[in-house]
Amino acid sequence: MRLDRSVVLVAGSIAPDCDAATAAYAHEIAREAVAGLAPLGVRFEIMPGRLPALGAHGLPVAFDWEIIRSLSQLLAKGLLSVSPAGPFVACTTTLKTLERIPPEYRADWDRLLAAKAMHLRFVPPGWASGAIRRSRAAEFADVLLAIGGGEGIEHLATEFLRRARPVVPLDLNVAGSSGDGAGGSGRLLREFLGASNPPYVLRDGSSPNSVLSRLALKERLMKPKDVAAHIAVILDQLRAPRAFFVRLLADSDPNFAAVEAYFRKVVDPSVADLGYEKFEMGSTPSRDAWMNQEIFRNLGECSIAVVDITSLRFNCGIELGFALGRNKKIILSAMDGTRPPFDVDKWKMHFWKDPADPKERARFLDHWGLVRNRDPVAD
Image 1 (cartoon, rainbow, N blue to C red):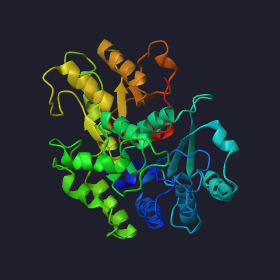
Image 2 (cartoon, one colour; image 1 turned 30 degrees about the vertical axis):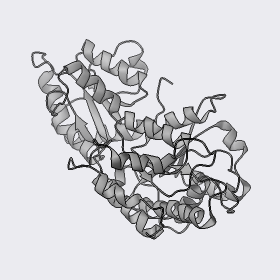
Image 3 (tube, one colour; image 1 turned 180 degrees about the vertical axis):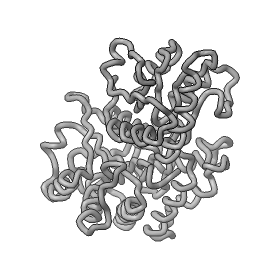
């Protein structure tokens, strides 16, 4: 996984009665992870709400506002800048959060917004449940970094794993702020290490158990800065997020040659440069016996769908509808002259002309940049 193209959701909490040394250790790991990963180009997803109460240890029981402060300080020191990839932190939150920004974090919040370094994504009014915010945030991140927590972090892990996205859990023996769940990130790590089949594999196809085993941190033997460095090593070894290609594949169609050239000369190199691994029926090795199962499983697990509707094939329309229903990020394109059907024609589309023209790739990347932070059409 390319660190400069990845989005990491940092989530979790610590129990109010956690011992002070362990609480401080957990917070220091969160700060060091942000400080170490952000300059490498990693972007972050968080879910800030009202400032959580301080525990008996004197520290917040959640990490979101401290992450905002850490990023703000890096920006103020000139160690971070907004890149063409976009804001380096996105918040999935509620409108009530705007009314409850803690005064001690207001300057940090305003600094990130003023620098266009933070993107705000609101759930609909009245939909303030944590489960809704977690499901939405999981759709926009590539990796979950789990620190403590209870039911919430366990739900997030389920959301990531069902999308075939990796979870990096730390076992700190901190429990969660609400006292619920079955063990939070610590239980997740122990289950991962004890499973006969790992929940995901690394880029080289091997099990992640060896690298994950170093995150058993109950004894606090590894310095927070070293933990953060090891997290970066793990992220670097993960498989890239997947881009699913929906396109004309019938070689008897008169437009096939042009579409094939467009994907090979324009889409393939662009997607690779953006840090994605492609999945395309017919050219990517499959593991399912039934083609339809292969299509919809991979489409459901992808991070983004590149949908080209040239020739208006019915199967492409079905797959587009499935991606919409699963709230996928979608890059929609067609050969110039295509007349999109009703409803689809209201979307911002990329119309391409000559795949051999070197400018086509730049035009595709420009379009990608315009729509990359667009919210899902269907909630």
